[in-house]
Structure formats: C-alpha cells, structure tokens
Image (cartoon, rainbow, N blue to C red; front, side, top):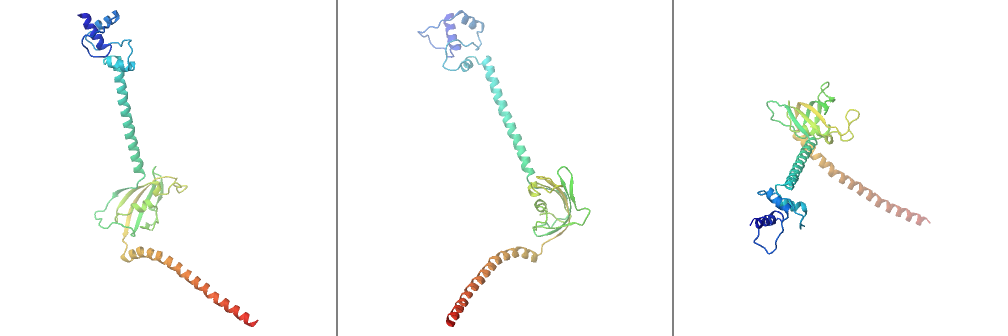
Amino acid sequence: MLEECLRRALQTQVLGQRPRAASPYRYSVTPHQHYLLLSHFGRRTRRCSSAPSSVSPSAAECRRSPHGSCWMAALFHKFNMRTSVFVLLLAAFTCGLARGDENAAEELQVETLVRPETCSVLSRMGDTLQIHYTGKLMDGKVIDTSLSRDPLVVELGKRTVIPGLEQSLVGVCEGQKIKTTIPSHLAYGKKGYPPTIPGDAALEFEVEVISLTQQTQWQKMVNDVLPLVCLALVPTLLGLVGLYLYKKANAEKPNKKKAKDKKSKKK
C-alpha cells in the first residue's frame, strides 16, 4: 500500500501529472527517490527527475516546484519585469515633463506685476502706447532700458519692436506693469544681436504702460482700407501702362507707312 502511494506521489511530483487510477504500467522507485519523497513528505517541492520532458527543463521544473529555487527565479524575473516597467513609466513621465518645459519655454509668457484699479480700456492693434521698459537676458544681464530717457512710442501693428514685445502689449491698459518672457524665435532668433544678445537667446522684459491712445475711426479706416486700395491700384496702374505702350506702338506703324509712301512718290 505504501509503495502504491509512493508510486502515485512520484507520478504527480516528478512527472507533473495528476494521480491516476492503477495503470498496467509500473514505475520503479529508486532508493534515492524514496529518500526524496520521505524526507520532503508533505511539501510540493521536488527535484526534477532525469526523465526527458517535452518542455524546456526550466519550465518543467517551474511546474513541478512552485516553492523551490525555480519559483524564486520566476519571482525575481517578475520583479525585474515590474521594475523595468516602472523605470520605463518614470522615464516617459520625465520626458513628458521635459517636453512640457520645452514647450513652455517656446511660448510667450506674460505676467501682470501691477494692475490699476480701473482698467476699462484695453489696447488693441492700431493703438499707440508710450512705455518704459527694461530688457534682460535670462541670466539677469540688462541689455537695454528706457528709464534714463523718454518713453518709447509703440504703435501696435507697425512692427516697430520685436514681435514678442508687441504681442505682449496687446490687451494691456494704461498704468499696467507687466513682465514678459519672450522666446528666441519671437525676439532676435538664431543670429541674435551681437555683441549684446547671443543667438537663440530668450529675453525678459519688464514693461510699464505710461499712456494709451486708442485708434480713431478715421485712422482705423485708413489703416484698414489703404492697404486694400494700394493692392487694387497696383494692377490698375500696370494695366494702364500696358495700354499706353500698346497704343504708342500701333500709332508708330501708320507714320512709317506714310513716310514710305512719300518716298515712293518722289521717286
């Protein structure tokens, strides 16, 4: 009876199969296997037999000994996989933050330092502003300031200042003080402004709006209509010039014919 139980246990633990009914095929149990079964009785950990398996030895051993050294190796492998996934997620998160910082650095940033109590009139394109400003590099080095001279007159839309500064002055009111961070592509670009401003340099401006003069209806009409009129006049003028040259060329041909006729009559 004991030998039959040992055979079934050996069939289960060594061959990785469930206990079956009595089979005509008998399995011989060696003394070494008797020792293993008796010394580890009640535990599921068994050594793999030398019998050939249809799967790889490591996989077969993992099936037979889930609490043995192979199980520890599988746990370590699973831990390594989780660690790798965690590291990849952390790297992706870090890259996302870096990308976000890069995108933020490439955009115009405007911060209001001082805002007046009443701010009913906001600047728009075409308005004229008088401002005091102080321009710096990102390391704090001052590149230009208007505090020692008269305020700078800026007419929005005329491109009299760098694009980033002009854009930051849209939507401000008289008496407002702002701080704007301008990326390089909205400042002096890759070339910079040697020797004061290096290439690809972001700039920081502190601007105070001294006065705001809104655009009148007449100025708005002139600024809006005049460019369209000029665009319409250019092809019209070209057409008139072409018509004049064409008429002039046709008028010269009869004169030449008359001169030839006179010469022929004289002969």
